[in-house]
Length: 253
Picture 1 (cartoon, rainbow, N blue to C red):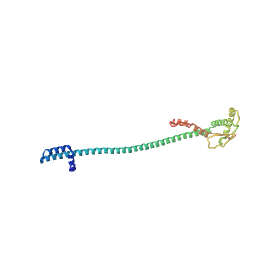
Picture 2: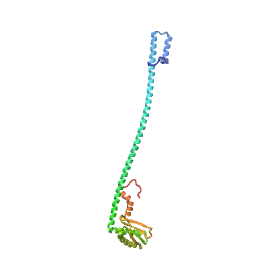
Picture 3: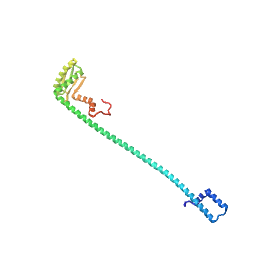
Picture 4: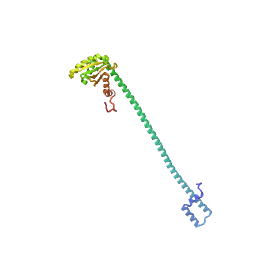
């Protein structure tokens, strides 16, 4: 209030209708003495102070309101910026976590599949060892050879055929082929002539290959080939028996 210029204070005073009316009434009745002039001046000063205080209070209230509004606006903007930044970091953290979890799951799955494959290969290795032992049991081996040779004759259905065997199996294969010829004649009513040649690798587990006389049909009845076919055919059932049903697999071949 003390900082307001006199012209401003006087303007506030003169703008009041009640003040002007009171001053006009007093001056119209009679002349004022010094004491009355002083009283009127004091009233003017008091009124001017009151008006100035009210005006200052209005300005202060309005300024506080505008400050509060601006402050709330700034706080809201900063809060939204912080929320957006937090949401971005949260989503980034979730994506990173999902990637890490997926990577870990894939590694575990691959490790499990690798272990299962190792187990299957161990099982197949055991089967191959058992097959090799079959070739060392002459009685069972002759019976096996006779069976596969008869099967070959019935598939070829030609009057002549060649039987390939390992060099060390030539004599035992000739014996099995002779018995197979008799059985073939009894079953089909036909006769077949065959030759035995020891051309298969010594590393083979055993068995024979049959080639028709016309050389157009070849049947692989070696122990290695029959075991391989059995592994491929029985693999789904072996997996099911060893590891249970795979819920992710819908088709089996």
